[in-house]
Image (tube, rainbow, N blue to C red):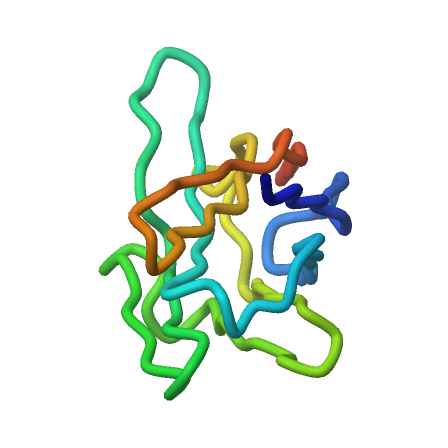
Length: 117
């Protein structure tokens, strides 16, 4: 069982920044990829960014490229999402995701990000 605890959400004005963190209850060396997804009201959950914990390879959704940066800290078993130049349309609940080498998938409880005009 892996627990993922997100933090760092909140309310920010358009153009501002927020940093989300996801702490895993196990060593992330046991985890293949970790990522951030988001879900806005009435919409499907969508991938924002993900990273491989071993080599740190990243990929991003087109709508966040150049604005968001995902990183990992293997020593702290955390994955972070730095969000800059936030837009109103970035408003959503953001979920941390972990895919283990065993194939198991885990989700965090979600953290609300609200961008105001």
